[in-house]
Image 1: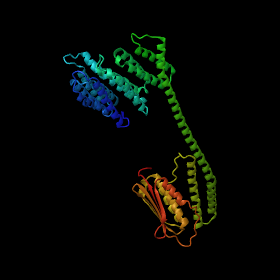
Image 2 (image 1 turned 135 degrees about the horizontal axis):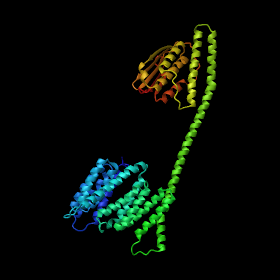
Image 3 (image 1 turned 30 degrees about the horizontal axis):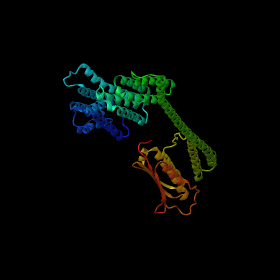
Image 4 (image 1 turned 30 degrees about the vertical axis):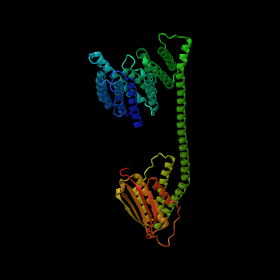
Length: 533
């Protein structure tokens, strides 16, 4: 599972946070028989800088911090407190992002290093001490494994708010409590770990608001009982968790329950043995606690409104696209009706007249010409029906009426019958090129030969070449100088433009122009990946 957040900036931020944490802890504890002051900076880099690698290499980072914890503890440096806190964070990251084999190795190294840190010279290390060392290592593993299984399913695209919440929570707890970490009856690393863990929990508050609120409440009660140095910071975190809960949970019932619970927790935190409890003070406390609820509900309503607006825009865009498509289909339907009513009518009438004339005409060139007109008309009507079906349903796959190679041969035979002298060179290797390229090549040959007949006239020599050239299909139609004194056939002038459009559609190129012998050359190159049917 990847846990990367846009490259190096976050890694640098983690490294800076680790170094800053150690400088705060070690700088506050400059007293007694400690290593020289000039070792504070190097030790801070030794312990804090590896956090810049924890996202990409969590297991090596955990092993490094385990060794750093053991070494700094033996040297009597206060950096051992920082190493203990960061080591447990690295173990949690390992459980979140690495496999179970890496997790077991990290747990073993962390357990041994923690045991070394807890052991005092001349004091026997009891079974309870070993259980404590193992238990404090298991906790981040449980948290990391839980986040790995749960948050992955609820993952949202933008994690920036989560990172900011976690960073803000850690900054608030550390900066407001670090001056008193060495003045209590507990090891400094215990208080530091407690503060850092409570701050990091805000990083998942948006995804698990109820669980984080419950966790912050438990942390606040525990801090009030065992660690009064951090109770105020834990109260602030609880209020933040309440605000996120009110923002993410739509139910007013659960919001009221969370509000009342927070009022009770706040009372536990601020009311001491000698505090006088009055109605006014209770009202002020309740009013203060309702502020994060109001902020959270306001932000939740704004988010819901923004989400509704995005949904409305997406739906509007979808409807607009659907309307445009419907209009296009309606226009296609209209064009199909016009083509059918106009073109099909006239072509059908031509076929009927040619058929009637064929039965009354004697055998000979005239009868052959009438037969060719009738067959060509039938083929045009079939192609026209396929075109009309495609206009009416663009998603429909057009039926292949004939193999493209047969279409090319038939076009050459028909133009030969019409008077052209056609020399066809059809490469058998073209059968293995794509169907789109072969179909386009067949249509180009049909239109090209028709243009030769129209503009050069019967008797003109034409050489047609369709060959496979690597990953492309090359089509060339070269005709010689036209005979003199021919009658030009009528032309719409759209044949060459239509061919250019067809070739451009499939990503090919087409050139046309006179050659040096006074004839005309039409050449097309079509992309044709082999093996695509």
